[in-house]
Image (cartoon, rainbow, N blue to C red):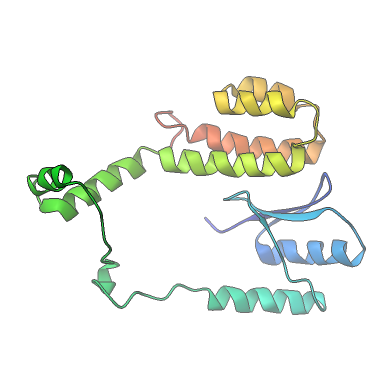
Length: 194
């Protein structure tokens, strides 16, 4: 899935899509003197800064350059072709004893444990929940029903959350409910999990 972003001016969504799609709208709003301009990374819910100096073409060119430079470089140690990186793990002696007794040894056992935990969906659920919380706090933190809606969200009462957020401005409510819905589908053990 490609990275997506959503830009707001106050409580109005002005653009959503790739960073190259969102940047022109953000630049235009900034040039028009709009205040309370924020761009969210949809995956993390974190607000991000765009360098809006110069023309729209300058902004887009910098984004293109940044994307090309930020490509990951392989680590020289370990087994680079396999993506293996050697790192230190600190455990108690009883943990090392247990790991040594497992089939395949300590490394294989740790990989299996990590893979099992990742498949459980807890990490994805927690990350989606955190993204929704960040956005909700920035966009809806001062809105009526925010506290109650937050409690309903964390309690997993998504029906109550929908009702409590229904009075929020349309763009804010729609965006936050989309992020909350994503977190709801990633609840560990739910049928809708990918």
